[in-house]
Image 1 (cartoon, rainbow over the protein chains, first blue to last red):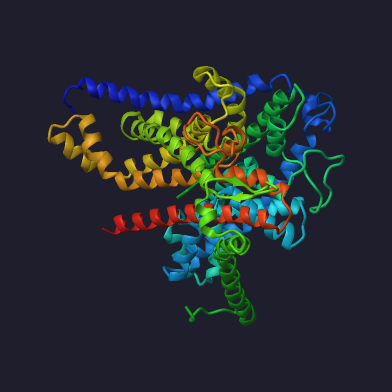
Image 2: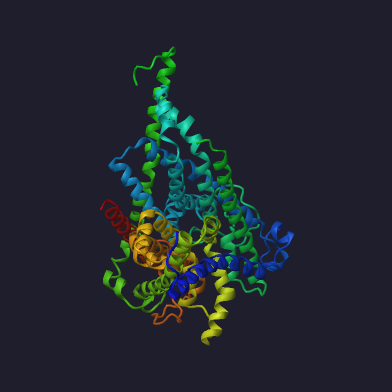
Length: 286
Length: 303
């Protein structure tokens, strides 16, 4: 189609739009490059695998923080995945267009908007003090799970809605109950979508620092946690303390090193989720 | 549905029972979201309201000094904290809204399909940068740069925090604006071109106005995120209790105050309760923003 020739303002405006898109990409690259420059001296095999040394930080590694973050991630998966998918199934398959369904949807949207530090206050009051879990792995897992729940629900609802109506109707026409339809047809078809959405949520949860500050991670551990009620270290909290409250001259490099490990972990998870989604889309028959 | 014939009456009974049981289990799980939202509110309210038996609520909301740990004369005015939050989130939106909207316009109207498919996930990846990492970049690189540019002793101030919070909210704003713009019907732009309008006029006079409700919602959700952002402001906003007057002064927003002070207070005392009251204020602000956006979107969709 032939359009009128572009005016000068149009050309300027369009270059600005293009420039913003380039700048957006540049931010991502810049963050990675700057972080790498600041942290490359700290990175070593020992840094990744050795226990933490409080006195001379150059003698130790961040292994306990990596393990702590992995425990947190596993805990969050075990709690918020089943609850999130369950809620999504109820919303899309069972509730119809009722007032209760709209109330739940409103609650989910508002939960997604609650600041993470407020989740931290909630976790501190409920899990740490009321349920007397103390500043333990369990308290942190529960707090992060509550925070992640709305993200998982939203992703799962989207995946469930993408399953064609005909699947439900054919299954029920064959005499299956609603639960048989859901458990054997709907959930298996939607699971890839639920999982990818869940992994992205998990990656975000692993990077969250504010709730962990409130419900109490530790900066120094002599042994790895062996029970859910043990104290724990975590990568984001470790990065934060090294960056702001450590006097060693090599603390900034070690903070950047920990941040690099953290961001690699979250990006590997998110990119993995995106690739997984592409893969599933290719295989999908509908 | 009752007419289904089965050879195993007992299996049939079990099948129906499982169906009914699962319905109730799922209903209970789904109700948890409502219980959690109410639970968060009630717990903030329970501790927060106790503050006001000792500190009059007007002194709390409009007092101009926050100094709870002073031995002689503790002061509980959250106005400097609220102002700090306003400075940082207003500054962040001033940067992120034009920036994000430009990216959205580029993605939805100018970029080729291929470019868009690569660029959109890249922009969304910015949301995957943990905010503690942004804070670290602010400490190590942005702070010295700002200090040098403006001749300050250090670069930890509202400006630094605004820039980084803008980066944190950028993907939300860009992505939601893009959804709003590409959700518009092709007929709009085609009619505009048919009337002889250039692409630029079409974007300015037709498409952006038509997508205004969605863009407004994107800005509101970005604002909610900016107000709730904790790690960036905790690390780079400068952490000063003085009443902020300019972007080059250090501030301490509400979120940072909670994160700094909560580990140093006695559980259940006035200071503890007052931090829950600050949390309550944060919760109510974000709740109001979300609800208003929700209502507004529902109304515009219906009409």
